[in-house]
Length: 397
Image (cartoon, rainbow, N blue to C red; front, side, top):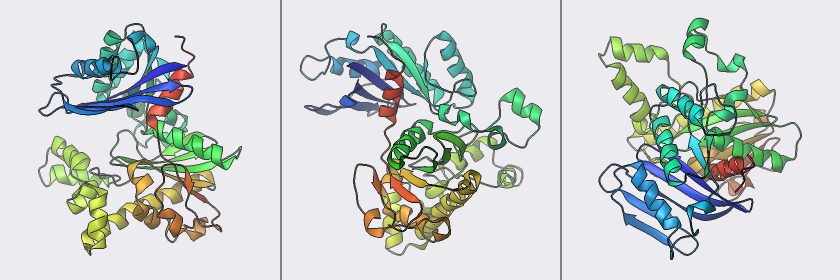
């Protein structure tokens, strides 16, 4: 048995899980939120403990040190010392075109992660900070990077290259990279195992505050809705998704917005929030049920965008065996799933409404018996996927 510590280091948060492999038992989990801000808190949970307390976490070093102290605490901890953690798996959002698989971190890997700061300015810097802090606290542990973009490195050039001057693409590495790869990989592998098909065509729909959809053929990503950055594709919580580029030029040239202001609008003030004024889908669904026409329109727009991608990816793969709904909204919103699957009989997609309304924390089918396409709800588990990939490197300890 090996204890794998999973770290997801964000700009103002640090999430963790300690997972025993290969049993996949979660020994401890939690997070420190609002790092560097007032009101920072530590959340820590084991089988026997559940702690939420204020923590003066000025930086990520203090946050991870507090987590480490709890993990090794004589009363509340689950390990005796740092040597009981032989490997640490880090979620890294952007690996550019350099990383197509999980890799042991060395100075060259860290330099590449830093090189891609410009491609993921909100994510890669804190990801690297988490690695550097973990190296100091666990000097004998093997540090491993699992990249969100790695799963999408299999996308063929016809789908990943943009129709801009080739020299721009090549010189500045402008292409479709894709995101949420760890989640899409995890759920599609579960779907393939369920389908028991040697050759499979799966459309994975990750719906949370951030949303993406992936065409997965024979276990490999062949197209994906997020591209060079994480703002295009589906309508998201605060992000616009696909938009005519002319709108951006109009905002800048005619309405006087700066490029930074437009970026802020598209990333933080658009999507479902921009359409309704609500950022939580549960509020939007409640308002729509009470007759709020703008909220109902937002739900319809959201589902319509997903439908269009399902049609496109079904064409790209010349068929589809299964749709997979996952992540917070995908797993819990029967409203969105119903809207997406409505009037899709031409594609062989038919929903069982009773099954769709069930709330279960396990893989389940929600399609009608005569549906040609399996419709699955599969809870994602990015931390477990990172642990599996870290463990599969065969690290000794």
